[in-house]
Image (cartoon, rainbow, N blue to C red):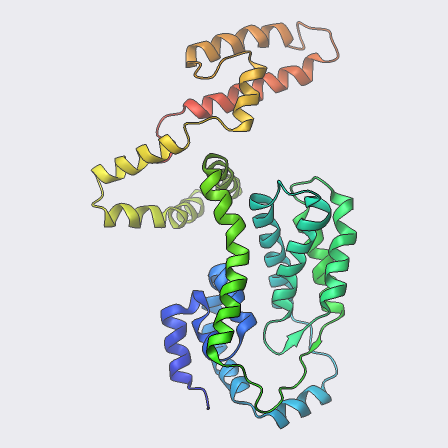
Length: 339
């Protein structure tokens, strides 16, 4: 049955970030990608406003015309948008793995490269193109040991996998008449894939709430710090990030509820993270140390280990460690840090 342009645009407007229009048009890989990235992090969804006519045309293309096109063009054209998407989604999948699966054995050698490779191949498989999954994963597995243990390793792994995927790109085989899957099995497979992606992240969020919230807040803070020279842009981005929180406050009444939710966040983050426990050890403090105790210990240790007063070669790195521990514990005591 021919696909309707009007229905496609309606589904794009209502559930575009969740890939409903792609599901309607039979573009299951694209639909899964949108489900996992909320419409290509929002940018892809907006960009598709002008591309939906082409998608509908492809969905309505007869099998014989598709076979002739694939035969006439031996290789699909190289698209910079697709390449950028491969790199970004590969990094995204790798970051999710770092958050939810880092405790697994051989994480940096097997789990992380396979996660990045899966993200890159998902983008490679969007639309009428595909790539060689085996070679893409091989590139990830070969690159991963070079950056073993590094938190930025998803970037070079994703770059290597994306280049490999571009080199081995090809058109998907033409459809065979009468082989279109029914909607139920397609939705079942997409749901399984979504659960496989979301389960580790959900486990991490519910069982490591403190570490997860700090990790996310640090990532957002690092992103905002990039725009220190444009305060207005920094404010706009910060407002967008806080939009879900503001909507939640508005739905619950604002004002008093706003303070209530802030107290909930304070309680959630009141436990010490691993980094803060290390800071307590550096300053020789017990859990629950007051600001006065932290400042007193910092002054004594800083005076002892300051390079101007201590000729030891270990003085400077130790002094830096003390300074970092002091900053970490000051942040833990900082009031209203969620405003």
